[in-house]
Amino acid sequence: MVKGIVSSLCASILFGYLYYFSTLLQPLSGEDIFGYRIILTIPFVIAAIFVFKQKNIFVQHLKNIRQRPWLALIYMLNSFLMGFQMWLFLWAPNNGSALSASFGYLLLPLVMVVAGRVLFKEQISTIKLIAVLIAGLGVISNIILKGGLSWESLVVCIGYTLYFSLRKHFKISDLSSFCIEMLLMLPVCIYFAWQVDMPAISQINEDIYYLLPLLGLISGTALITYVLASSMLPMNLLGLLGYTETILMVIVAFMIGETIDSQSYPLFICLSIAMTLIIADGIYKTRRGRRL
Image (cartoon, rainbow, N blue to C red):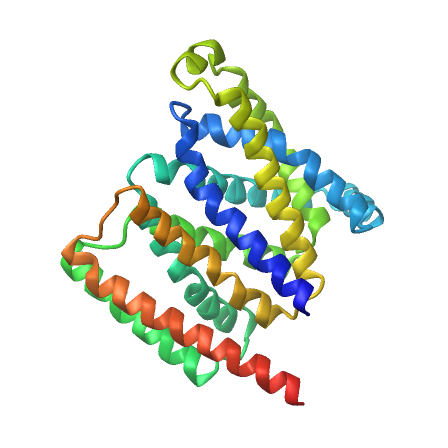
């Protein structure tokens, strides 16, 4: 249990740092960084397939696609959804949208709770229901004061919910499926990386040739430690610890100079309260599970 908790926290810290690390890669654009990240992370994903003994599962997924070709469309859709999220994660801190994306990550677990109830008939605890209602109040206030949520927040909370719902419905939630999704991104990412004028970039950022391999190392290590944690921890505790990354993202947004405008205060306060309730519910269920 302790090793799983440490692994999860290390993964969250690395992912949180990656949010800040992308600002060190300027003047590369979000597309450029995304391209290099996927290219440099895929070797770690493939290595994880062998380390965690999922080679047979990977082969079985390929057989399933061959037997049911329509599954390829599902993988392609999931690959697009995940790829767009990865791009946004790297683009937002460099374009004044770090807080907007962070709000989406704060709202995501609550949207997933609603999706779980509506799509998969999952039960919602009283605390989670209250958290959803408070978050909904924050969203309504944002619609009244600002005309709606930012597109970055909507893309995160709706896009990820659709992505995870598809994975759950079609039973493709394992590491091997994720590897297939990553491989489907590769052609686009090679194009993004290929069109970068690295000599010109290196004149502006002299450390770029050192930073890019470090990007792959951080991203790959974070992925492997997260997969390792997921194999050792119950889902409730894993999801609870995942809030560490979201909190770090908000901190990074403040570190790089972004501020919350007064009209967004109600949304931020409501999401913070809702997140606290979700964490409290997770702690309660984890302790209760230990007693049983």
